[in-house]
Image (cartoon, rainbow, N blue to C red; front, side, top):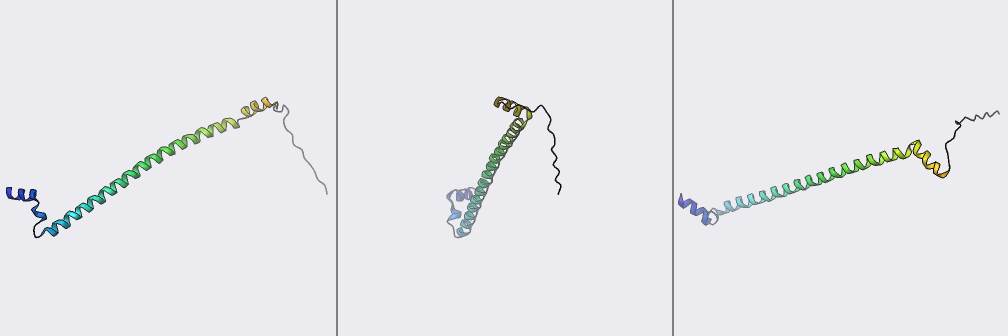
Amino acid sequence: MKKGFYNILRANFLISRDAVNNWRFIVFCTLLAIVMIASSHSAESKVHKIAKLHTEVRELKSEFVDRRSALMRIKMESTITNKMRGRGILPSENPPYKIKVNIKE
């Protein structure tokens, strides 16, 4: 048991005759770890981007609702009447009537 532990500490498995197989495995594990780290980093950056876009969508929806309600207030007849009253234009007291034109040939 002591001999096996000392061999591991001295890294005899990397300099022995069959070390090529060990080196291949170590390189494979290293490449696999690099791929996993890159994949994790990519996924994490996508999650952050999605969260940022979600926040932006919520802000834009809120702004849309706010602008739509402001537009509805501006389009109300009472608002238009008050603004025109300041210019000296008052609403008509007489209802509108139709004018019919008959053309005879």
